[in-house]
Image 1 (cartoon, rainbow, N blue to C red):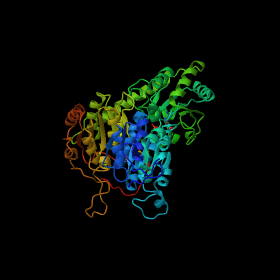
Image 2: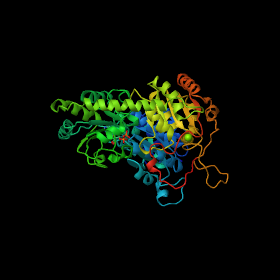
Image 3: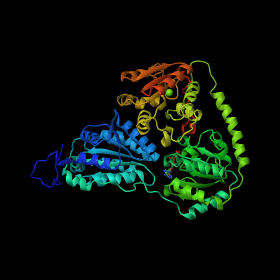
Image 4: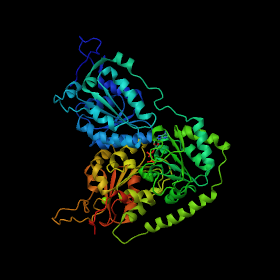
Length: 579
Ligand code: ADP
Ligand code: MG
C-alpha cells in the first residue's frame, strides 16, 4: 500500500525505521505535538497502521464497532473538553458512516475532526474503479464546517493545523481531513519530519465584541421590565461558568436553560425559569440569548413568543443573527469576553427592579413543580416512564457529578423535564437535530473525557442504533451504566398493523427483549428490573461499581405516546393506528 514519493531526501537508499518515517507516523506526531491525547475510530485499509502509530507516540486509540458511534464519542469529547474530538475512519463506507457524526457535530457546534484514509485521487477523479474509490472530499464539503485533502506527505502537519483551527475557532464544528494513500504511505527522513512538525499557536483566539455593541445591548436591557436570559449549550461549551453565574446574580434576571445548559446554575436556583417556559415566552419584553439559537427548539421566535419583544444575542457567529427574528442588539464574541464587557458596563446602565416579575415566575414554577410531582407519583404496575424516572431522579440527583446521556422519544422528553442538574455539562442529549443513535458513543466519549461515572437513559428504539458498542465499553472497562427503558417500540408497543397480515406494526419493537444480555455477552454486568425499587437499587449499584453495566428497565407496552412535545411536526391522517 505504501507508495514512496519524492520526499525521501535520498531516494536511492532503502528506507530505514532508524532514520525514516511514513506519513502515518508523521500524522501521529503532528497530532501529538498539538496536544491530542485520544483518537476514536475503527481501523482497516488504509489506516490500520495510523492507529498503531498513534499508540506508539502515546495517544490513546479507542476502537469501536461502528464508525458512527466513534464519531459520536469524538463529538462529545470535543464538547466537554474544548479540544477537538478526533475520529479515524477507513475509506468509502467507513468514511460515510463516520460522516453522519461529523455532520451532527457541525450542526451542534461541537469541535471534531474526522480523519479518513482515501484512495489515490488520480484513479478516483478519473472514476477508474479503484479500491474503495469515492470522492470523499467533495461528499464531505457541504456537510461540515471545513474539508481539506492532503495529497503529499510533507503537507500533513499543515493539514492537521488547518483542521484544528477550523474545528476550534469561531463557531466550533466538524472538519473533514482527507488523507490519501500516497500521503499516508510516503516516506520521509525523521530529521526532515521533525523540522516541519509544529504546534499551532492559539487555535481558538478569544474574540471581544465592540464597545458599541455592548453599549447598545446594555441600553436596551436598561429599558426592560420583564427580561429573561436563555442559556444554550454554546454557553455551557464556553466554560465561563463563574462569569455566567455572576451575570445572572448581579442582574437578578431570571434564566431559562436549554436542555444541555441545565446545571450551569443549579436547576433549583431562585432565578431559574425552567418551569415557566410558556410564561417567559408570552411575557418577556427583552430576551437575552446567551449561546442559544432561536431555532425550532425555541419555536424560531414565533408562536407563543411575545411579538413585541426585543432580542439581545450573544454569539460567536455573526451569521447566526437575524436568522428567524430581527435581533435588536447583536453582541458578537466569546460568551466570556462579551460577559466581561457587559459586567464592566453594568454600573453605567442601572436596570429596573424585576423582583415582581421574578416572583411571578417563582409562583408559576411552584405550580409546575406540583404538576411534576403528580406525574412522578406511583402508578399501578407495570412501570411507565414516570415510575422509572422517579427512581432515576432520586439516584441521579444524589450523585450530581454523574453525567447523563439521554435519547429517545418519551424517554427523552420526560427525562429532560424530570431530572434536575446541579453542575455544568452533566447532561448530553440528541440536541439540535433531536436524532436517535448517539447514546453509546456519546457515553463513551464522556467517560473518556471526564474519567467519571456516566449513566445513559435511552429508549429501547434509541438503544438499538448504538447497542453493539457496549462491547467498546467493556473492552475499555468504562464506568458506564446503560439504562434501556423498554416499552417495546418506537413511542410504545400498541401500534396496530391496519392490514392485519400478521406483520408487526411499523412502530412495534421487542417488548420481551432482555437487553441486559447484550452487556453480559461482552463481560459486563446485566440487570433486569420490573419495579422502581429494583431499578433504584440497580442504578445505585451500577454507578458505585465503576464498571460497564446495563439495566433493562421493563416498562408497560402501553407506556408512551407518539412524539412527545412535537406533535405539530407529525402530519395528521384520518386513521388512528394506535389503540
Ligand atoms: P441550544 O440548543 O442549547 O440552544 P445551540 O447549539 O442552538 O444551543 O446554540 C449554541 C450557540 O452558541 C451557537 O449559535 C454557537 O455559535 C454559539 N457558541 C458556541 N460557542 C460559543 C462561544 N464560545 N461564545 C459564544 N457563542 C458560542
Ligand atoms: Mg420505546
